[in-house]
Image (cartoon, rainbow, N blue to C red):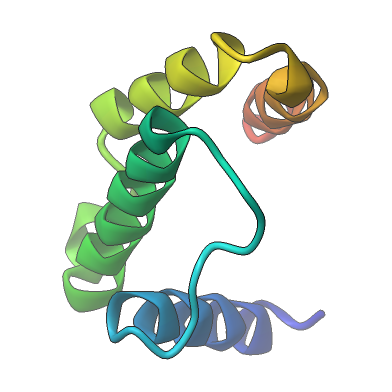
Length: 89
């Protein structure tokens, strides 16, 4: 996916979620739902203020630590950590 199209796609997803046009699918524990919701709102900060450039680390840490408390999310946590580790390449 071309970089500009990719950026517009993700911005659209974030805006749809924050505007209530999309939601988190499936049955998730309340703490997981809250962490995902916070992460999407942090993404909205980037959409509205691109000069920030990155989601503040505390949102990423909260998301990962919350997901890690639930065994069913361990594969996702590993995937997200791999993405973070490879993002500096």
